[in-house]
Image (cartoon, rainbow, N blue to C red; front, side, top):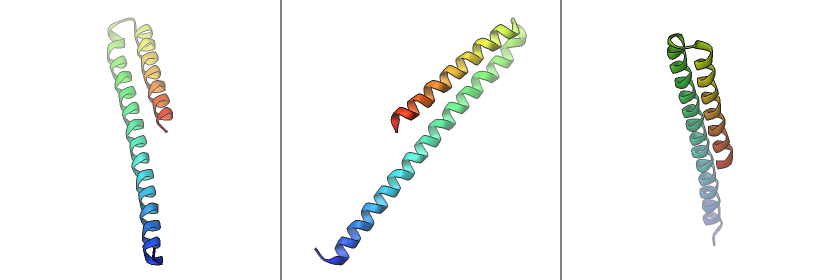
Length: 81
């Protein structure tokens, strides 16, 4: 193999590695954003429902659901690495 071919293969390997890392980071950011968005949505629903019912109980229940969902998303994210 010639030196230029070896350099080209090395460059392609490094480029592929960087691209893979960048795509993985994008996926992590997207999943984290999705988890935060859904958690925020659950909390918004809780604040809308709470005044119509026993506020503290309903808000506490929805807060628990939101935190549980967020922890599951973060655990899935950690497992996928």
